Image (cartoon, rainbow, N blue to C red; front, side, top):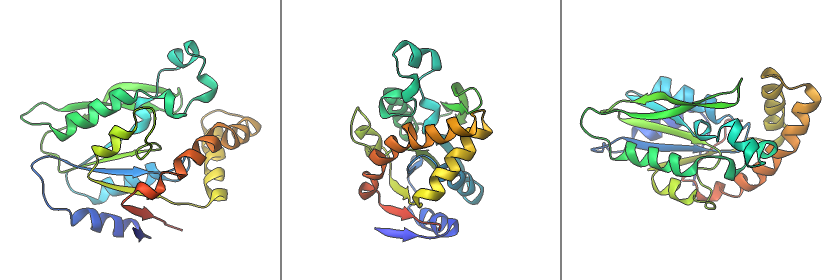
Length: 208
């Protein structure tokens, strides 16, 4: 497994992939707060003809989570529309002609998915897919990895990751106490399961 220590190294490695007659799907996995979104956005700026599909867009809506009694577990593997995520990635792999693929985004302020907010145009060379459970193999998630061509796992130290989560949760409306409780509660529980999937990645990103 290759360990990459800069965004430029990651972009260069992706750039060595041979051209395909379909988009190249790149998976960027990691625990909550690892920096996946930031890394993905930096890669989009460096790569030509690149689109981004965040897994967070496939969160179940708040009303559904409450109905199922899952609101306090939001972010766990079973609180996403896994089947919809798989269908979206499969559609990207097989896209042809002039029809784009639509994917949902995620509004962090409302914590709601935004259907159809992302347009993936035919002819795009690379599609970055970022999210926690790309390498998870339970609850239907195992199909995701089979649709990705190259996968990366973002490795970051625990203290940095938790600090980022607390800052993010407070920025989007939680009190400091509630942010710490969520970061060390649901987020940490999910992180333990996600970190076990690191061995399935093709490469590791460790920015330090």
